[in-house]
Image (cartoon, rainbow, N blue to C red; front, side, top):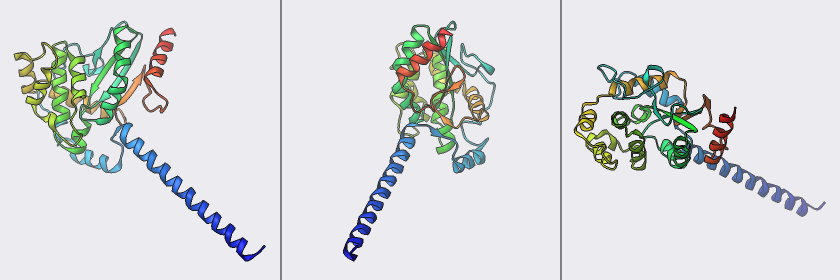
Length: 258
């Protein structure tokens, strides 16, 4: 083989190797973007764990004092779950979420129509657990203030509608707009009949702050990696990359047949 041919083949192999490395790098970037944009608001990073540990007992999401006042109709252990749907439903979807968490908004936006359909038809009930992960990670009090306001809406029998309004109007993750009670009451105006003197007082007085703090502690001790954490009949399903609204509906229908 001539020297020229050997050089040509070597150059071709080198170019191929370079192209393969470029493709691998692109694949890595794509996977990173997918995980960062849509999976969870993560608690598990070492740096974040260090911050949370250092701020344990310090941040506004975990220091609420006073009696623990659960919202009306709260259920489960320590009355930390806000139920939506019929008690007679055979399947239960458990959702741990934070009103400041963008991944929680992504989950709600994608799955809300299906969740509403399944709860309205009596096939499934949802148990919402409210946490203050973003307050702990980024500072501020928007997670706690919004969770308290949502609990106040539960007292008025309007949790689901207000819950949806909060996600539809969610600010940027670094914008602590929900720390303003006035903003939360303004958004409550989008839910007919919710803004009453009782609701205003509940929001402004932080009636359920200690309950929110207790819910957040339950999340921390539960060993969950981030929000949203979604369990169907006790099984974590949101980590399944193949999950879709249609698959969720199928899973509920199959579970209800058993």
